[in-house]
Image (tube, rainbow over all chains, first blue to last red; front, side):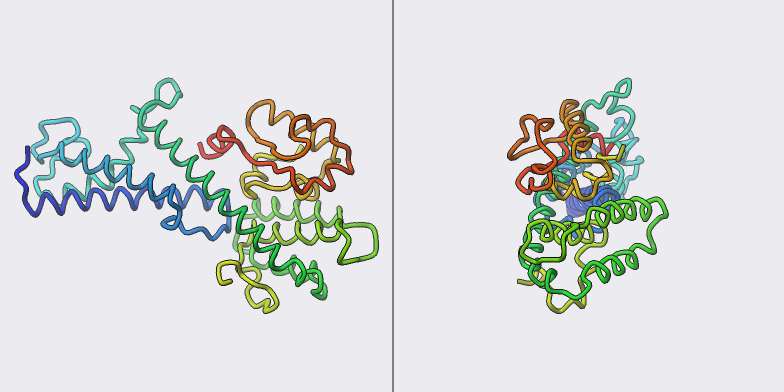
Length: 232
Length: 81
């Protein structure tokens, strides 16, 4: 057992903080890869906070099992036999996720233990983000559909701004978005434009959500007629 | 065949009529592919007509704003791994 001392407490705090930060960063990277430009800040998503707190607590428990002498497996692997409690806490915080997700957490390709729990946690975070993102897009289109339908050359300007915002993306990704733009514009209603016709409203709504999905709300920056649900 | 997993990954839950507009397939091909993914447990479809997608007509697909398609837990998990 450790006698309580300040260095140990700081080490435990660092283990918690760095493990939680590592998890939030890992979730952020996973989400950015998939929900490309979705502007969701991880520390505002309760599911991500819960997952990072759980990993942070795991790091604190792992840290409490170390004493810097290297007598135990956890001490050797996570604590790197570091005698300084503060440094050891930082090392445990930064490496605990590696241990959770290491090969020892899988058996013949099947996830077990830590990897299974962690991946389920990330799926839960993704599901929660998806719900938030859907609610955001739905509110955005509700607030702005009338403005879009009244906008001169909405399609032309929006697609041009969407393409501009994608210039720094990979060619594969631009091709993927371009194929969807092509499909949407090929499915443009055949009838003359009429703002009250449902098919034109669906067309404008689809253009809007397509731009939001791949460029985020920033694509509407400077469109003074449009309202951002985050600021309403 | 479009990579629906990739589209649904990037869009999140999406109304069927919007997915139809983003698709290069006909509405019939789209619902058939979605029904296949649903059978495999990779997507969830909720709302009117979701029980039997193959019975939706082209017109119903084009107006199906309340039918929502999204990746299931397994679909999300697969996309994250």
